[in-house]
Amino acid sequence: MSSLSQEVAMPARRTLHVSVEEREALEDLRDHAPKPYVRERAAALLLIASGVPPAVVARERLLRPRHPETVSRWLKRWDAEGIDSLPIRDGRGRTPAFSP
Picture 1 (cartoon, rainbow, N blue to C red):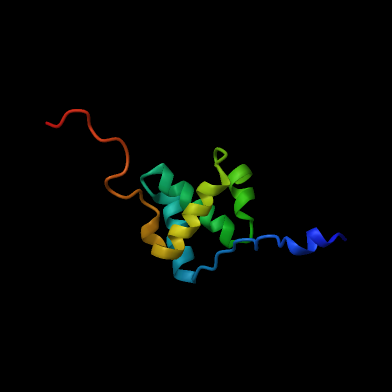
Picture 2 (picture 1 turned 180 degrees about the horizontal axis):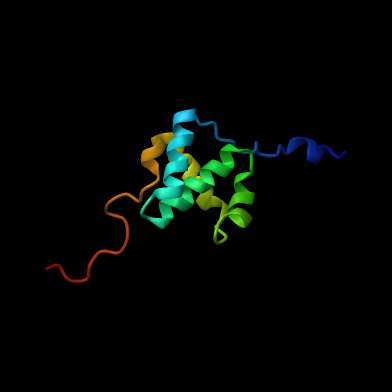
């Protein structure tokens, strides 16, 4: 083994630990949320909590492939805000060209 490979440490694989209540809430959102993006985020978080690496979830386990950084942002928001992190925040998106 070269000295370079010993110096460069691989980043730790990101995991997610959820309580029974959080798992039930995520499963309910995955199955019944009115917004598709909330269902997708809940499904991704449940997969990660079950041990699937976030990069694999992003590339292969969602309805359409996502960039791994996107799923990483979902995880960071989950750590900071919990279940309230799933909906898109108000004020996001394009501003109207003309106000009424």
